Length: 599
Image 1: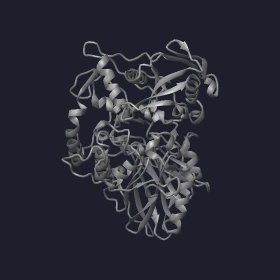
Image 2 (image 1 turned 180 degrees about the horizontal axis):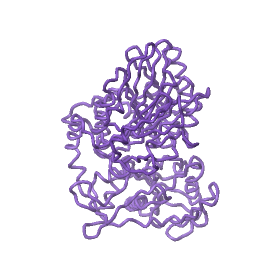
Image 3 (image 1 turned 120 degrees about the horizontal axis):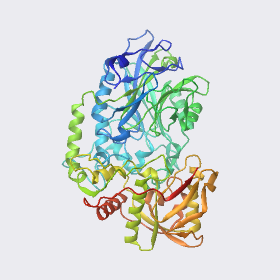
Image 4 (image 1 turned 180 degrees about the vertical axis):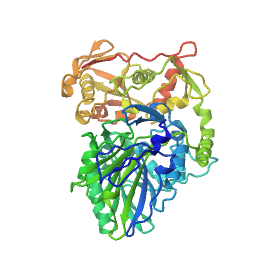
C-alpha cells in the first residue's frame, strides 16, 4: 500500500489540490486518493453567490456484495516513478464506510450510479434476483441510478419489480415471506422507449433539490443494449441514441428552469493506462471508445457525464459541442472505486460553474472498517444461500480460466463441451456447441474459496461463472448458415470488436488475423469432427437461449430451424462436472487449441 506520505501528497492544479483533475487546468497528474483518508473528502464553505456540491458516483456494481476475488477485486495504483502495485478493493461493507466518510461535513451531497448495479451478479445476490443488492444500495443511500444493459437481464417487467417492489412471480418472497420493498432510488431510462408510443419505460430524469440547489439527472443505457440482452425480455422496446436523448431532455429541463444537469450514461471508454489514478489528459494520452463521441455530441448544457459499461477507471475531460472541457468519469466495477466530484453551484444563474468541477477516483480499500449494517444484511442473505452455494459439484486439478486476451479459452471450451454433452442427451444427432465469451463471467479457481478444500467446485462458484440462467437450446443450421455464424464473429455488428465464440470438442478452423473482414475466418479450414463443412448439410447445434435469439450480433443463429428449448446452462455445467470429475480424478483445463490463430 502507498505510505501515509503518499496519501497526503499535494499537487497544485490551477486552484485545485489533492491530486484532483479539473476541467479548468488539464495536463496535471491525478495522484491517489483513498476512501479512508479524512483529508480526501472534506467540504468547503460557501462562496457568497455560490455553494459547494458534492457528487459521489459508482458504476457496474454487478451485485458484488462480498469482497470480489482475483483481478475483479483489485485496482492498479501507479506511483510517481512509473511503478505499479495491485491493491485489494471492493466489498459493499467497505463501500458503505467509504461513502459515509466522504459525505461527512457536506451540506449538499448526492450519490449516483451509471448502470449495471444488478445483473451478472455473484450467487449471493443473483440467486435471489438481486433483491439483496437493491436492499444494500438502499442502505448506501443511493439517490439515483441510470439503467445499464444488465438491468434487463431478467427482462423489463423484472426491472420494474426491482423499482417498485413485490415478490417474485415464480419464486415468491424470501426472508420468512416478507415482501420485497423495491428500490428507494429511481432507475432512469430516458432512451428506453415503447417502440409504438415512444414513451420511456421508466422515468427519463429526476431533479434533486439540495438546500436551494437544483440538479437534474438524466439516465441512458447504450443504444446497443438490444443486441446484448435476451430479446424476449425487451419485446416492444426501442433503445435510442444516447447523445440525442440526453440533449432532448437537457433542453426539457432547461425549459423547466433546471440548468445544472448531469448525465448518467451506461456506455464507456478506454483510458491509455489501467491505473485508476492515471491522468488521461496528459502527454497526449487520452480516452478512446464510444463515450468520447457521445460526450462530444451531447448538449453543452450537461455539466458532467458519469459513465460505465467498460469497467475502466478514468477521470477525463472531453470537449462539449461548444469546445469547452467537460468532465467524463468512470469508477471501474464491483465497487472497487468511487468517483468524487466537487463543484460550485451558482445560485444566481442556477447552474454549475463548469470551471470549478474537480474529480478524483478513490479506492475502496479493505483496511478501513466494515459497515456493521451491511455486514448484518450480507449475513442474513448468506444464511439463506449457504446450503445451496456450498454444495460440491465437481473437482478440478488446476485453474480453468476465461482468458479474454485470446480468441479461445480453457473455460470457454469446457462450457461448450458441457453444453454439447447435455444436447446429446436431448437429441443424439447434436454435433457441436457454441458459447458466447461474454456469458462467462469469472474463472473456476483451484484454490478453495471457503472450507470446501482446494480443487472442489461448489455450486456457488459455478453460479458465478454462468449467472444468467440462459437455457441450452438446440437449432438446425445448414453448413452455409454455420459458416455465416462464424463470419459474424468478425463482421457485421462485431466488425470493430470481434466476439469469438467458444467451440466444443471436434470443431476446428483457422482464424487468420492477417486478413481483413469476414475473410479472417478461413472457410476451407472449418471442420466438424474431422470432416470439412458441407454447405448444404444440416447440423444440429447447441447454443444458449441468448445466442439462439440472435444476441451478441449473431442474427443467423435466430434463423435456426427445429428450435428446442432445453435446461438452464448452469445446470448442464453442474452435470458435466459431476459426471466427468472426482476427487481421485479431477478435471484438467482443456488445451484451448481448437481455433488456430494466424497473426
